[in-house]
Image (spheres, rainbow, N blue to C red):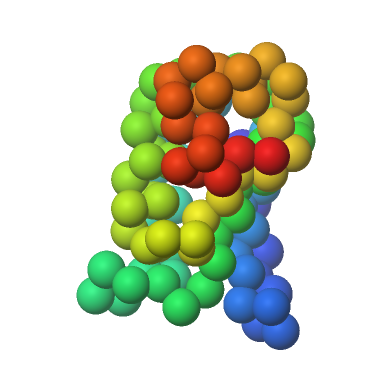
Length: 103
């Protein structure tokens, strides 16, 4: 569902997701994500990357988590990488592709 990898040299925490990120799955990983985030006093010294290469569906609950994490991380500290074209289109339609740095 989600695995975490931290690269201390680049100061990047990568959360790699897989499968369907429907409402039920997002509820299960939501708490884990909040515990693992390198955010202290609302500021992140590390970059946070959500890797969605192996994701085939996202729900609005997952988009809400992305927005929340991006706010906590601060400007330029959050991005979403390796989106499938239809998932990237979902972020684009919602108007969040630039704000969340979706690639």
